Image: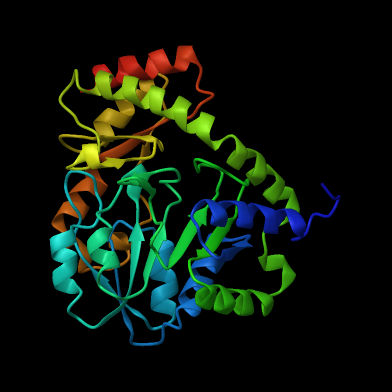
Length: 321
């Protein structure tokens, strides 16, 4: 590794390694999530007044970029079971002259991708919470036009901050590289961060195995109470990613979060800073997304939790009020 802290060979190596795993042409790595979304929008040549479809539970950063460009977000409600876009509702919305679909895989869940691929319009998927997830026998997003992969500190694999944009075809890669080349060097992911990403990528398989083992124990503990977790309606056909452990509560989250906190377990709202909070009409248009936003919390789930903390979280999950 060189002693350079700016973007250089290691950043390119990280991008190439992950792009190759998805059989994509290549990509670019950026310091900031917002910048990566902007570059993805520009790569697809989306313009003012274009309509794009996305989930109301997608990160607010998407709404910020789209609205700043005058691009019109078209929201479709989500499935109650796993918080992914409801395919039937999305197909109805797709008749509205949609130019692209931005898909977010929430809390490691796997959207039903095939109908979106068949629409013949660009599909962009954010796998920041679902790295390693699989649709059928392939990695989630393998047929998308662009993949956005945040590698933040809370991601399954992290660079300590940064986001990759991967292009499936040479056409989109050429556009992506041209846009990237016009940016100042400080927008790119530094090698110092990329070197951590390389290590995390090399250890991904073992990390996912550990996370899956922990998730299974948490699922069994949660079943002892009155609450549920997010799960694909056809779990035998997909393999979700073991991101933080989501618990969907029967009511509001405040009492449960206080209970967990008093017992030494920190939780977070699963869907904070989402598009649904930016658009006043979204809650009425997407009642299931609104319900999940108000009732879903995340419990810690990562390989280095340790047996003591795992046992503590299991106890809390099984006794939630």
